[in-house]
Length: 406
Image 1 (cartoon, rainbow, N blue to C red):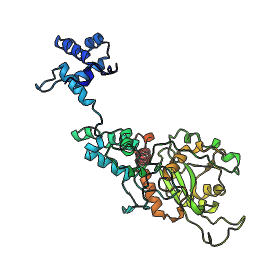
Image 2: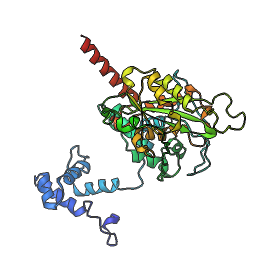
Image 3: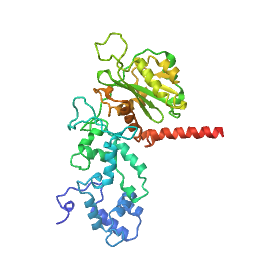
Image 4: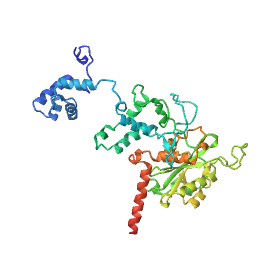
């Protein structure tokens, strides 16, 4: 039986692909000793197309790379067969690498594993708000680019440890690809079972600051991210007026989380109008949490803090005095002026979804989540992790001081 593509009823091949007649012409010209560029000009094809054809579809049975049209056509037909097994289904080492960084457990500072909330995967796009699965939760793009750093291609094994982020998404979402189970979609940022765009919420703000502490007065070095030590902060809110504070360094994207537990008396009776804030994220609680956290950093990492115009920062002047950290405020309804922090808050919703009680998490849990974020490679850092980037800045600053002293 002749091949189906040579039958009289077969549709003509797309001009994108080489035909059998073109392969015969390549074989004749190659036998006459002509080079790749001469053959390409004769067939009105790109030289790269001819070079790729000679490399991929040459006959190798004789021990050389002799090019014959029939053997080349057989190789091309075999490569065009669909469906193909996915790379993750055939490469066990690569599949283990992807699964571990996508769904691996996070750890506390002492190294103990945290399973997080037990959430049943229901295989649907939307549902009532509930806790999310806790995992390493690297994005497919982070995994794909980090492979090139962890496996630079020096050995034979390294060359097989390559995959695109789209291939990872397809193994998660396309039924029948067979490598990763669809339950792992719960470890993605959105947690959705379908690939759909996500809506973004607008920021809210209150105007109570003076002109001298607006973002326009912030040092110019903070805008170009050249010098570390400039932070962006915000609160993520949960059920029952619970909250967690977030601090993100603009240059390295290093993240620190503020534990804001409810104060004594919260929830014990009806809320008093204009009474003291007892939910844990009032001005005094936020001031103390920032001062307690920021003072653990060296002085060169305490240059400025940018926040929105929320009432929780009414004691910002005391933060400057107690922690040595000047505070600047964004314009109202302008979350893009704290883009790094807004992006990080979106990542944190992987662990602290909306509609859940955030007061249930202990400080060790927050430290574990922050460590997980700081150990993820970031595209903007050349696929280094925020922890690696911060360490590099600190080492460079220390070497500079030593050289100056010497």
